[in-house]
Length: 239
Length: 239
DNA sequence: CGTGTTCTTGATGATCATCAAAGGTGGTGG
DNA sequence: CCACCACCTTTGATGATCATCAAGAACACG
Image 1 (cartoon, protein in one colour):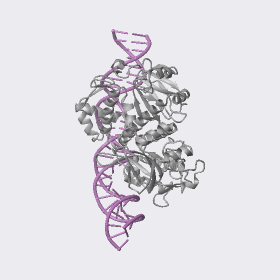
Image 2 (cartoon, protein in one colour):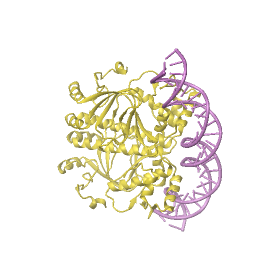
Image 3 (cartoon, rainbow over the protein chains, first blue to last red):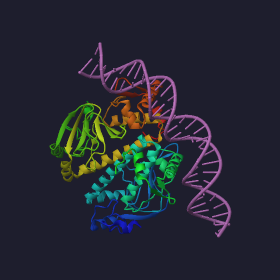
Image 4 (cartoon, rainbow over the protein chains, first blue to last red):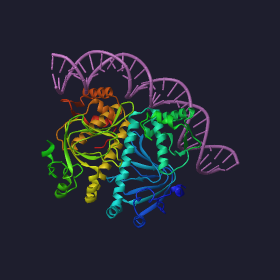
């Protein structure tokens, strides 16, 4: 669906790689070469891409769909480290076991490559290593931003920051229009923001009552008063 | 001081690079080459390595001393993103402005290199790019761990996790003995853990009263009951 | 020895978690 | 096609944890 809207990079026959994902910096010939070493998978909501502590055998590019990255706590609760969308790369780690789990929230297509094959490719295509570094730096910045949100903001400000981050995620996927996909449950959002699902629910209905947001259907939101949400985050989210 | 304890890599005449830092993977000849493009600085507590939003002109290796990375909130409070110790690399970012500030907590020596010169070096020594990626992956993991701490743990568990992380940081610097450096104030720790300085103070005196920790002098701690602290974090910090 | 900073300790209260129950929604199978 | 079931969401009542406000003590520094 987003396929036609992509413009610029195009290509991405099987993998979407050219557009975003790991292989973005490659030219057509190299891309074919790399794609030869990959597998494509179709998956369903709740499927695990990998579990926390699993052997880190693959690197994944999410071609279509949404996933959450989670760490499990001993008492059964979980912390959501982040959400990932079409075009994002998942599961690169220095260690040989994944330090967190990746679970799909929607139907999805992914492109994956074996870790040990990747090492060869990295030697052959140095641009890939640079790409991985750029992606890692981006992820780090996003995680730090999230740390600020969870560490220093009120419940309302956290939910506001989350909603605003959805529009950023939508833009990266060239999503047009004011209505955003929000495939995660209140519980997922709560585990992301360091709150309970009740608090998230109450906060969202408060925003709805104030006319700041609208939920046209399950899994979608529209932000009607972006300024109000921005103000809640205290101006600390730029753009 | 830690200098003689290093063993293995040694070298590190000026920069400490061989031991840790950015240049660890280089051989002696390449190291000399790289060092020729660096500057060495001696700095004092409270000096800023760089401010949030400054032009990202340099990459720094902390040779000696401790620093905190912070983001400022509009209301004047700050979130400490992390602490950095001898051997750590600071200030690598994809953007052209630093997204956070770096301030020293102790007297320090740093080795820095201009951003644009680094780009040339990265081409000449691909191992450096790999090194940067490894460091970034490590930082990401640490930040995610911190997100779990701040998002899901009680005040006591957060302080316990912080203390335990100090022993990890000490080990990386080959610090021997049970007494750890803790150059940060209660306020710094609070801003790191998403608490107030009063709560940190109360929690630490509680630990002291229980005989779990001791502060032989300002800026040092000894952990007397590691198991107790570990249990507080709920077993979610391994090792 | 004084001054600024950091640390401790107490009293009070707000925010958000917890416990509980009912209303929606989508999906599945009879 | 309808009914049932699992899961998600909403809303309320209550209370615990931690922030806030305040003041004094310890410490480091010049």
